[in-house]
Length: 132
Image 1: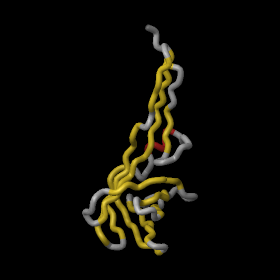
Image 2: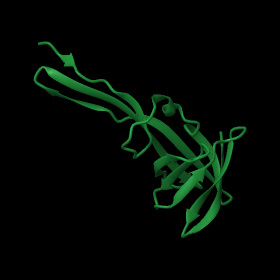
Image 3: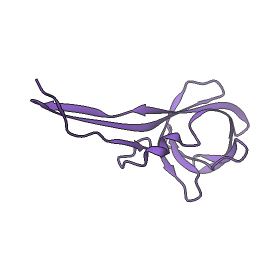
Image 4: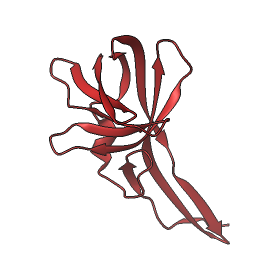
């Protein structure tokens, strides 16, 4: 039986984004494990790249896609890990994303491996500082 690969797509999509992005963005500065403080409390943040591709076959013809996305999670003061979603670039290279509770967070591109951004809770901003 002859199998024909009809499509191979390698792209990077930010978490929860349906629009593919450039593969080089899979190596974003935010990737990896960060030590943080959120409003003065110790915390951790992790971003990893995961394969979200798939494929299907119809008889002898198969289609395969390889697409990657960012998966983020956050632990505040040793609490359970909660998802970070909807990661989007800001105008100056920073990263906006949504915490599991629905609040918007922001981290600017780090300087000397440190980023000082903010979180929101009930409409108020609080400091978020993270470093590698």
